[in-house]
Length: 200
Image (cartoon, rainbow, N blue to C red; front, top):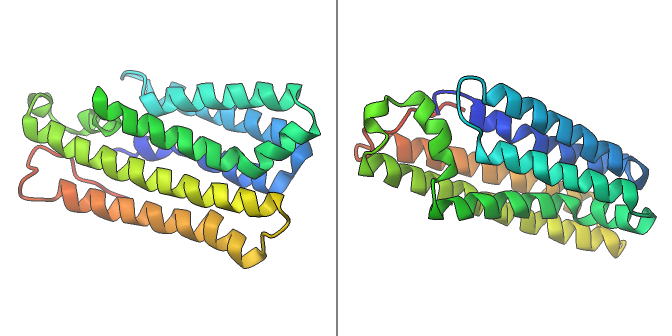
């Protein structure tokens, strides 16, 4: 999309994935708190002169809840967050994206900031954003499956370095690149004159 706000909205989710993976159980509360603060900062930035974004609000609520659970819980709870927190966060994000199809596709919130108001009620504009939202939701949900599998193997003591790399890093990168490519294809289609141009 013409602006980068959508990608900013995903930073807190990526930050938690990185911090929780490398910090261990003792660092989980801090990792969740840092991700929450990042989500809050991005929410404030993204709402300057515009409305609150669904993904931003979801990040603030998700990481606030995870921070509270991590601080209150014992080592066993924190261990579960280390193993399954990434998968859980990705699943929440993907399901929220998917659920937005029943109301306003989440990509439409960002697209409106890069598209003339005259197109906002266009059936084409809505259809394009429904496709974009479906693509991103599917990519994130599949990503969550990779994180959950990694967490299961880690909990069982069977997660090898190559498997960890494949499930937690290679697969997410491939899925994001796929979603970006599909976004570019959909928004540059001759059938989508009302859609904003996408830049990575």
